[in-house]
Image (cartoon, rainbow, N blue to C red; front, side, top):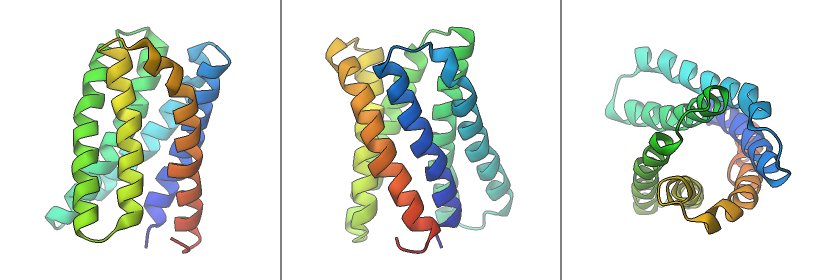
Length: 168
């Protein structure tokens, strides 16, 4: 039932851990370009295929959710590859934070508490992007690598494994 989402989250989990470790050990951000790009492209391509098959508002909501994730990693890859100003990504992160909080609320109303947990966790990571990049809160930069690694494991990789093995 959650097969495609499991695949997306598997890659998201891996790339979040890689991004967190990269910052933690002060490695060159160019070393993360390939994994971020692959993750973003897999998700965006999958969403584009799904877009042609969508039949309901619910279908398009799922596609929109995937695109927000996919473009996150394409944005990160492009910023590292071309040395772009990261502030547009910071603003993107604010809007995705708002979307994620809304999805957490909807999930709570539906009694889907596993997704309340996931959307809440993801909203924290995107909020961290906005606070550290746009508002230049340096303390958030210190939190990012640990938050990224923890979310990569507990809000992406493990849920992906559970989804892909029908244990979710």
